[in-house]
Length: 185
Image 1 (cartoon, rainbow, N blue to C red):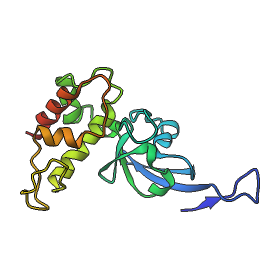
Image 2: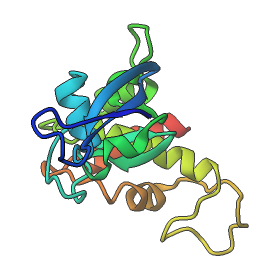
Image 3: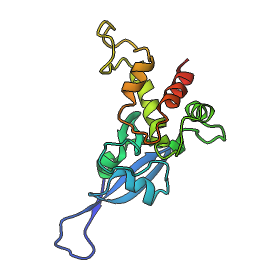
Image 4: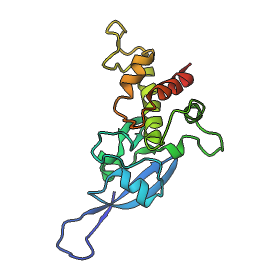
């Protein structure tokens, strides 16, 4: 990771670093201000507008993306700290083809959105939640009798708990849970 001096004041501390992010399978090397968050880099530098800026405090989940396969709020992540990471946004779920990811299709089929503002974050969060359950990560409602490290079965309570960090102000929760159920069957 290289860096360069502030162009306006040679005595100012370095505020930029070259950062390489692999976003939706494609590498991008950018000179990033140390204060910028991943959400702003995705939206303003890479023209990826799927992740939404909602609360900007990590409380609504509208900005959720996958970083190295884990769901995270991109509004809380300093982009420079993610040098070398794989970032997947809702735009990258379908791959290079025209077909939607099965979860995107399920959201459409179940009408699991109303205004749609939270939908990209909900979909990324649901993908992360499914992977976490398959890897045996328990949630707050997981039966303590489930052996540690064993895959966790996603029933409605598990799905609701695991997606509780993503807020839908329209009230599409029942359809979102049904869409996730459609994909995990």
